[in-house]
Length: 105
Image (cartoon, rainbow, N blue to C red; front, top):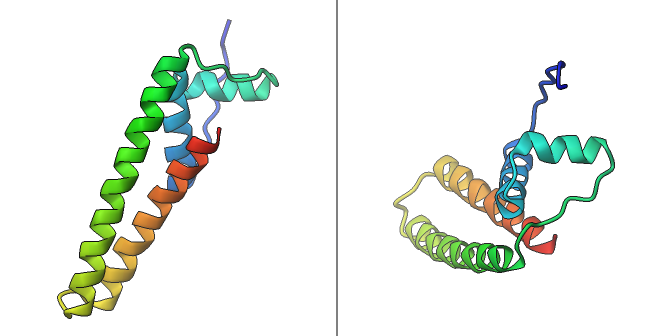
């Protein structure tokens, strides 16, 4: 019986990676953490679903690249201030890094 509640803090990138892994494994994030604590290998239930997830992540990555291109063009035209540009660019990099980490799994 599960009696104890554990609360942890994650960075946005860590949370996104855990969420994507949970989706790929068709499990809840809490179950992934329990498996990690118990040294249980995390298994994906359906290779077909995982392949579909990878295809979706690649599609998302392509969209992020298109957003980055528009962002860079707007920045070169002076349509963005440096703070907004850096903030948006950093968030895109975090998303791309999270996607690449999930794809490596």
